[in-house]
Length: 253
Image 1: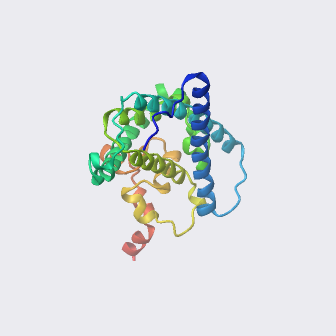
Image 2: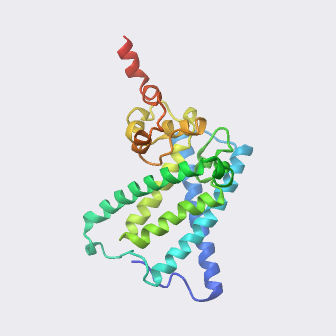
Image 3: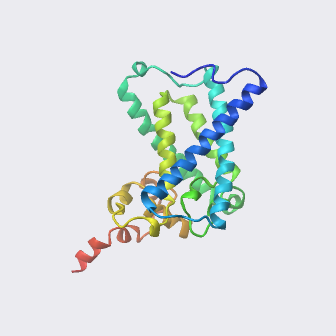
């Protein structure tokens, strides 16, 4: 399924492969952001100075993601990863199971690294760029400082070295990560009234959950699921009440 001649021989081939990967990863980000605005926001969105700042950081992140992807592909070509091509190797059920395993591991890794980046001694160097925008938008989704970009990309590199993964699983994880990051950074005012905050935000992280982090940076560090914030005491005390105001109203009445 994967072409082991993907990395062509010589410097010229490496340059071509690098440019190709960079274009693919950048387009993935731009398409996800554009679709979010078209399908969810449903109105024109002129970029302001903060958006341009986030866009520049995000493009810088794609350069780092490209470099780590090239390393992963090279390791695969040399037979050093656990990537496998035949679904029958572990069974079709494992493709779905490994997808969930990677999401859980990524969520745990993200929570721990995110809290680490918010420590005063690391914040300016690793995470200040992501919080520079006062009002985050979809453009903020991959606006990482270089060290943070390297940390996120290195996790995925480590995963393919340790856990057997089919290319479909890898693609599903990358797609989930991209879509989740973009949607979670949409401003609450930009979302339609029927957006399912009431069930999405209690156990699965959505825009209502992550928007709290951008106003209270000592809260809500998770990526996909809320259980780490619940377990570690970093969930905002009034979050659940604000999430379901209709329930509170019924209780009062």
